[in-house]
Length: 395
Image (cartoon, rainbow, N blue to C red; front, side, top):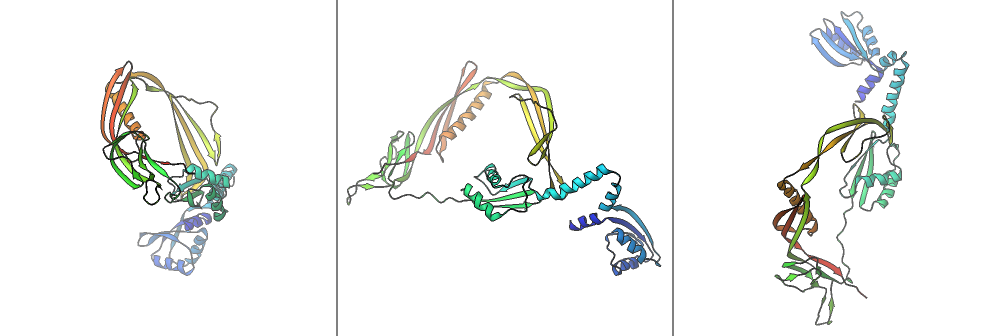
């Protein structure tokens, strides 16, 4: 890549050499230190190379007196382009602006990529960096990593380490999240384990405390399951931080009304496409005021960042917004479709109401039409952990 850029800046030309002794010409290039590359043999006495414009002059001088024919081809590079732009001032200004964007634009940050975070959202991290001063358009060469971490880590307690590495105009934010230690139990805390809902006890795992129920008993919500207060032969009364899990069979009955008459999306009525340019954090709108909005409209926004060959990102992004409006049509779905939608909704609701780690053992659905609605009912039997720890007040 460096050699290609150098050759482009100083200019180069393609040369074809014909000689009965082509190896002598190659040796003369080595003796006179004439730079050349891309050597291609066309036949036994003809080859083609690329060299600089100065190297072409040196080659012509070096082969004087040698039976050799040199034919120069197309010239390429920055000097040739500048020569063409001498009388085309607009094109020359555009070329200078292009170079300024190419080399100057990569001194600033125009894009962020966050990696390593699972629980802390990207938006929170980028907002904290922006408060420190690292944002779109910031200079990417003068980031004090230590000072930045001292500020950001105080604002983000769930992150233990963070670094911002700038490559070109892209800032790669590397994050290491903090691993929280397990919650510690204080010796002076006294607690009970009570039932979080009604159920039939199937298993009791009491780690500390005294069991108050047995397997096979039916308990109601709020009933004491494992007590943190027990009789002791030495002290008469023992206070504990009761720990344990109580598994039980639980039952749910949930219902939902599903409409049989719905409004469906019909054919496309109209569409509007708007174009804008994002220069850093500033948007230049290439359209007038007003837009189509509403529930009957779809808006599709696409971003096209301008990137040069080699991965050089320019601080310009082309934005297209296409808004499509559809007409609405009345539609009536079958009871089977409504029942299928209702069953899926009830299963999601059941998952939300169950405790973590619970499983659904049995389900039974029923449906009844009520006017323009279908009433879908779910009766489910589940197995879940119903023990809930409650702290007791202490004096």
